[in-house]
Length: 271
Image (cartoon, rainbow, N blue to C red; front, side, top):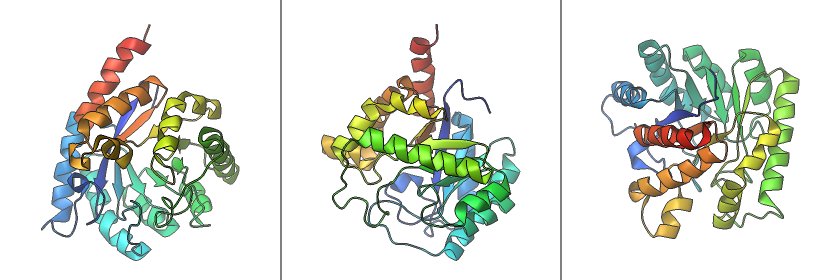
């Protein structure tokens, strides 16, 4: 897939506790698979080029579930969506190598790992064996500890160094296609997040596609004194800045609005 024009990745969470209720297809849904396929159809219809499916919440302080439970949550959904929409690549959002392997066997075409292989030493060699693209994200700490006093001397410099090493490690292992994600909200306070967004164009030095996940996060709704459910306007604003500064993929809850961002910013950036 060419990324000269930024693409949109729709978020679909097979969880009961992801921070944005609107992204969940959890246990409360009677037929989780059918609901997920219906949600996928809407996102693809709105313009999503990818779908990202996760079975474990990684919000700050989230409760950890086993890899086996993740597999039970995501694999039936991935299989159904891949069969229904074979032209739309599905990404599995996991830091467990066993989940990545099962998900790819079910039809997933990418692995999205918030830990860049640091939480499971088998992840990098597994993805190399699977021969699928890999999304490496920056995170300081773990989802359970990452917002406990995050500290950087220079957040942008340190994120670039981390992602450079992650890219090198992945490619040395045999992963040919690496996408980098600066990890907004993962071990970063408000000042860190906004400095990183302001300097996002510096990540181009990595010479890898850049994925940005800003959608409805606390860096948007907390400064505004609102909730995640009310943060669509702020999400649009920050996604616009991210695309203008070089983001290749927007990972979002609201696909139609993100597509509008891509189309309008292209009028500025295209000669």
